Image (cartoon, rainbow, N blue to C red; front, top):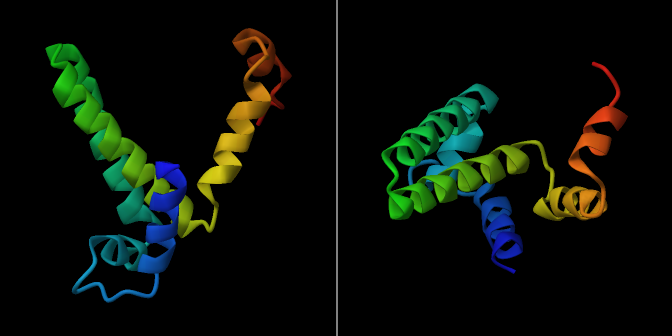
Length: 104
């Protein structure tokens, strides 16, 4: 699966030089830098959606997924954990799932 393969690549970039790897640059820059990229890319998704350009929207969603996966890598969370969470929610009403969450 492409998400697992990408997660493997992102994990391997932890040890890479920031001079040769964008992912290593982000990981070594810290969480705030990664969060800024996620927010930036999410904004671009919104704009692409509003523009109605499906191809551009696909590219921007891919960017959000990528940078979110970098964030997961930063926290040493594997994509399989997120997929497992989605699988557990698969046959649960969205309203029921939301109601079951603990208040924070």
